[in-house]
Structure formats: structure tokens, C-alpha cells
Length: 407
Image (cartoon, rainbow, N blue to C red):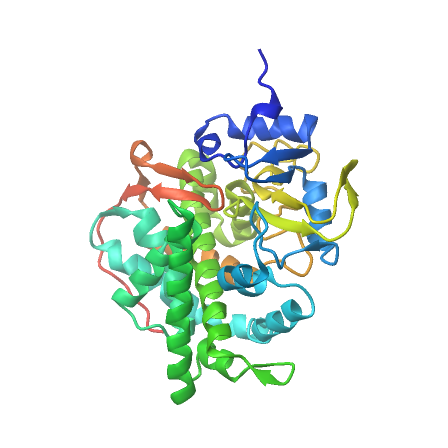
């Protein structure tokens, strides 16, 4: 007997432990692309959007689908939403003003200047494990690369402080309980506030100093604003790229012919391979938006004030957009995925940095540890409601002397 889609709760963590979850999403795309969903405790409802077209449409109509009440499955108060998401949970005119601060930093020239630093970071991360002969790729490599890059940019001291920021990020984005997440978000905010005060006293050439000196509508950001900005940079800068790197390595291990193909034609395939990893991994599972006015989406009437949830993980497997969407293909082109968001004003601002991080990490990995082997039996995936990734990905390789490059 075919399972009734009305009985499925996409917000229930138990659903994400199902091995057939992607097949269920395929049924939703075909039979119920815009479906009302109820939270597991029955406290609230939201509209679930599982097709590529609707996810794109909602993402690009920011005046109708608003973010200030949070980007989760349940709307929150604007102040709490800002505290845990910063500009991510703000709309015009505040959102574009806050976004411009970082846009002035992440310029093409800046990224060109970053190439040497990204290369150095990749060598440092891989060099730290290269003499051991084994490691957990998810923890020791995939997590350390974006952690190193973003903390270097913000001049966070090396050592235990970075490890604590990584721990808080994981707790904030994938908590056992909501209270734990809020506590972690606030701890990150307070760390950022403290760092902002230090940069006001002793400015430097780092990204944090630029935030301290930035102005929005002629006024400087408060320490609280900078702390929240810092938290967003840390959480967005670490976990999504880490997830893509770890899942990407797992995909390559389960598709050895494609792994070999990429190693042999690295620069030729790097662009399409990285985009396919992001599509297939969909590190950010969903985002929510609040409907500003009555609207019709995919033929379904939705009232003002209701929450809609964009399931990026489903949109990236949409059969009407991707040929053989369940197939991992590093030569896939075109690849109109929504792994970095569905376009519009909230499209990922760090998209180019994330791509370059992945480019350098895989290149240095293939060059430095050419015989690396993934222990697929020991791999443990994590299928979260918000972040999709790998808990463990043990690997072995021939030990070799570290070759670190100075930035």
C-alpha cells in the first residue's frame, strides 16, 4: 500500500532517518508540490515547497516573501530572529545596507588576493594530518579548512578559541534542543562583541576591523550589531562549506571512476565537479519565508502571515530541471542548482569564497595524499533538518612529511 503523504511530517527528525526520504520528496514534487505541513507537536503549520520553480520564485520575490520573522519553519519575533540570524533575517532597507558592507569586501580583486591565503590554508590543514597516515576527513580536514579561512579573515587567535567557535557553530545549527541552540548563538554573539571592542581599541587590516569601521546610513554599527554579524560569518562560513567538502569526499569515494577522472583532469573538471557536489549535497536543507500578502503559489492559495518553507534538498533533485537527478555526475552541465540559495537578494554572499576554498582543498588533497582511501564502512552521515553533512569519514593514506606553505 502506498503511504499517504498527509501522514508524513517533514519537520519530524525521525523522517530524516528514513533511507527513502529522497523518494518521498520525489512523490511530493509530483503529487503535492505545495503542501501544508504540521509541526510534530502540532503547535504550528507551514507550507512546504519541494519543486525547483517555486523555490526560485519565492527566493526572488523578497517584497512578498519576507525574512524578518526568521528563516525557519516557524515564524519568530523579529528581534529574536535578528539575534540568531543577523542580516539573514532582515528585509529591505536594512538587509541590503548590511549586505553592502560585506559586498565591498568580497570583491573580485579581494578574491584574487585571497588565492595565496587559500592555498596556504589548504596546505596547513592537510599538512597537519599528512604524517599520521589516517584521520577523520570530516573533522580533521573538511571542518578545519573553512574554520581556518574564516578565522584568519577575522583574526581569531589560533588554538582553543577556534575549536570552541566550531563547537558552538555545530550546536547552534544542529542542536539537540532549541534552548541549546539559542545559548550557542548568544555565546557566539558575545564573542564577536568582545572582539569588536578589541578592534576599536587596536584596529588592524582584518575583516573585523572593517566591520568596526563600517557605516550603515551614516552611523557606525554597535558592538551588538557587530557581534551578530560576526556570528553569521562564523556559522555560515564554517558549517556549509565543511558539509560540502565532507559529503563531496564521500561521493567521490562511492564513485571511484569519477574521483579518478577529476584527479587526472583537475582544472578542467573543478568547476562542474564543485557545482555538482553542492547540488548533490544540498548542505542547507531548507529556508523559510513569511508571506506578506495573500498569494497563489503553484496553484495553491496561501494567506498573508503564513510561513512557506523552501526545501532546497528537494529542488536540487527536481526531474524537470536535472536529467537523472539521483545520479552524481561531476561533468554535469548545465547545473542550475539552488545549493547557494535560489537567487534574489538573499543569495549566498560568500558563494565565490566557498567555491575557491573547495577548489584549493581538493587540489592540494589530490596532490599531497594521492592514495587516500575512505573507509566507507566507518562513514556516518548526518541528515539534519537544517544542515546536511557527515559526522564521521575515516580515511587512510601513506604518511608523508608535511609541506606547509607560508601565507
